[in-house]
Length: 162
Length: 375
Image (tube, each protein chain N blue to C red):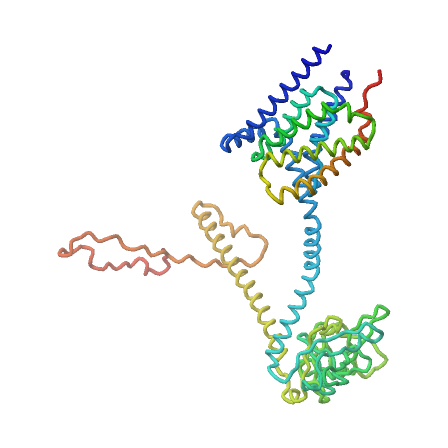
């Protein structure tokens, strides 16, 4: 990735982070989209797994700092998701919106599963309901929004032709 | 190449393990350490993001509350629109209650229901009927004066002819009884406004603008003393043997919503003094205001005269002409009241009581008794 592509990727990353703290609370949906996961996944497919893990760790700490009781849970989940996404980018990094949508869906769902299990705030039936109902819904919304943003931000995200 | 790949993979795994260990360590922190770490992050480099989130939350709350706020605003606007009419209605009801306390008995309060059709401005439906003691030709009055007369009676409601009706007539007079006439509606023109004509006033009787006209009590329908209107002007008619005056009606029928219907047995006792007491109260209040103004004026004149007297005294002491002497306007001078000499208390007597003072013998000052001398 050349310098121009890196700058565009960083700008896209920052846009997603800002959207996470503006559009998400503004909408206030019960199954919200997760722009941090989208940012992490879009960055992860462009960097090495170790870098993706560090990015995930930092993003996780950022999200955890707003919920101190879960400090560390988000960091661990995002580290894992970032590393996994970067490691599996050969599988998912394709110019196919459906594959990208599945990529986003899977990333968000895995993140939620790890997060709620490590957080240990929700137990029993409520945890099952969260992981099998609300998390997939949230992952679906995240995937839909991710695909929409990919479509909108295609000029920013496409690699520079050499 | 294979070694480099293996090395990179090993590095990735080391970084992953480090991040995971750090995350687990953060997760394992006790609350006393976890909160300061999170707080430090929120207050430092995450502060802009926290601010963005707070504003977004407020924006969402504002959006959610917008409908409720709009509903409250609409309710307040509606209440504000109703407030004026409610105040006016309260005022009318207070007047009706005041009239009821003066009439004391023999009346039925009723609501006047106006129609909106042709000729409906001359009639009205009343919410009291024969069951309440209403009969045909019962007078309908308002706190301001005459409204109309009942012409049809049902058990629970009645129909009244307002004074604006073309067939309505009432015998009227000036309160002192010097001028009599027959009052009837007077349509002022295409605008549809109504005044009252007082016809048949004897030629020798003249009424000044503003004079009150009341019902005379002749005819047996209307008791004496109900205000009909006030004189606006005399109008010229073809009748040369009598005068016709235009009156401003005491009651505007369009504003009548609460009225009183007088029962027939009340008419025999008359309504003397019911409206007169109101007029007397108004006149008394006016007199109080006028007398207050007079007292204030007198006090101001006295104060001005006292000041002038002091200035004159100073001028005389300085050997200059008195200020009043230079008054060339010829206006009568206000005589200043002479200041009352201040009686100072005598100095304390320090002489022992057992001694006789030399000045205990009263002196006779004869100087002041000399004729022509002033002190």
